[in-house]
Length: 397
Image 1 (tube, rainbow, N blue to C red):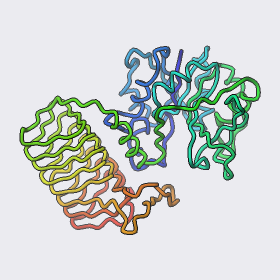
Image 2: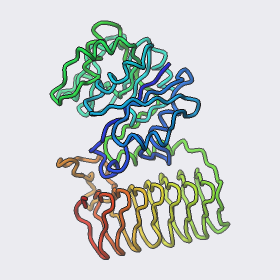
Image 3: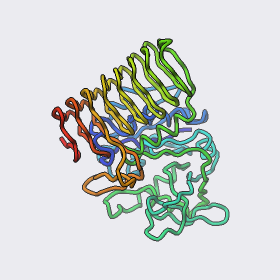
Image 4: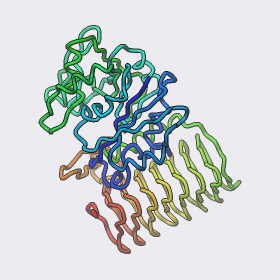
């Protein structure tokens, strides 16, 4: 059986992180999203068809033509015209029942196995805020009667989570599906038509579904996956360091005296931590990183090559590749009034749903010494701050 992964979009909502990589390559618990998805596929899957577009060469470089025994086939979507349009690009390589997934979500392997066992259907999840999602209206047998995109007046709390079991018949329907008001061919429109022709089941999930819509969603996904971290110490740890909880440390990483690591936390290969640094729980530190004297990392993601060399604080933050925080840099992460942080995304102020949120750094950002950054601010790739600067607004390109 084949599995189709939609991985072509530019994902402007996750800027600045996706200005330099496609969203499926964003790391969660030190592993790109797409690898989590591939590793969750059941053994019945022997080939993956990746629909790629934006920065497709980066995905090809990571996966090649095979991964973990799976054959990898790439199909280009030259213009991003919706998930239905993306699936249509695969019509010449699909001739049997198949699975299809959002390539930037993380699903539990047990739920994917259930999906694979259906004749046709989709995974769903009961959510408290259905207005944010497309939802399924089902009958007493969980057969889909209607698909509604982001209903203003919720008629169902079963969210469509972008995972489907389909047959090649879907291509005939997609060819006849008109473009939506956004000018896109939506797979949900085709599912609506299909559900009127054949039994199409909505299967509620029991495991996790981690959807990355905005940069800060990575922090929640990171914490969720670290709950099941298997600790493994492959690096060199000073006897004067203190480790509690489940911690994974990669090869050639050195943990110097006075370092405190509170798990769950994962640290990659070829890193230097300390002396006298504090890595707090739910932190993921990539390869070739440096956390130096007196620095504190709390609930954050540091991508490969990020550096927090001395006397700095990164809390509830995301540091892109090769970010360097100058001495004394502090990311504030809490509002005095205790309310949720908001962030501008494509000109719209979005409630992040987080009471604690630090800064989002694109790749190769450098901060000057004693930089102070307001909560929830975003810094675009290759930008920098002056010594003593107070960052009150996002810093664009």
